[in-house]
Length: 299
Ligand code: GLV
Ligand code: MG
Image (tube, rainbow, N blue to C red; front, side):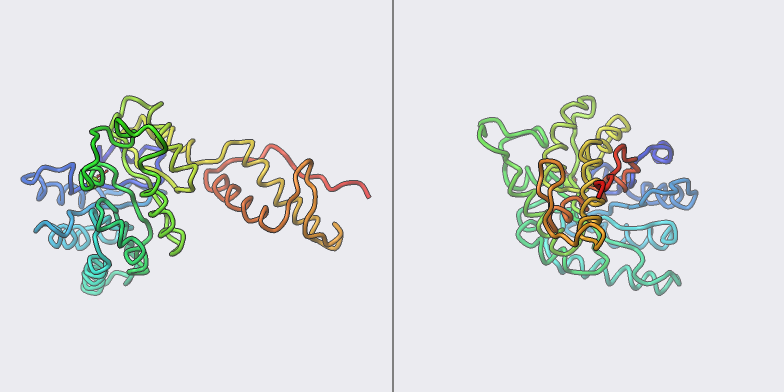
């Protein structure tokens, strides 16, 4: 898996020492991860290691072994089941001490905070603001469902009996608001039915629609679906670039210095430009090419 990840078109890879690793296998997992990171081959991908959470006795050793061993080839540590800002402060301090000891650049290694229980969610604003190292807030649906006693065993799907609305809406929005307020990425968590890519897509579309930046994949078969769902549709990307060009033109002296203008049947103004910037940025980040160009009207 560590090797296969090198060739996948994913933006990030994270290597796990937490829930995907049996307790007696954790010491070996640390060593395998250090070796894989130092061997390299993950170019162009954000390289992250998920350590064990702070209710266990493994966390300090996970961080020290991995960061001392491969800190130069690592971009972030993912801390699962974060409950308070103090837990982020602990990791921040430990990372600074290791960076200074090893002669690494201080502050380069980021933190990804997984929100996986009620305490984490009610403290998510403080967690997001706890350190400039925090880059990403991640929803951990499986642990979260267990922690709130949700009556379901299928991660991401609506719990049986909940027929109105989306049982995850509040949680997703809460995380998204904290992420946007503090300029962090909001990332949706795993979908466990790895062979059902249509279902993955359906669940992913919900958080993508709200504004999440991406979602975990557990299997290579989910990668293309994720890249597609979190990118704009071609017609939306084209439309966004068109709005930006048109608004640029119409607000210029040449275009009449106008603030609110018609683009086809639609009135566009400064707020339209901001919305278009969001969609255009997602499309550009995904490497999309525009298929329409704006032509100023004949004067
Ligand atoms: C991921 O860690 C989850 O609990 O969903
Ligand atoms: Mg979890």
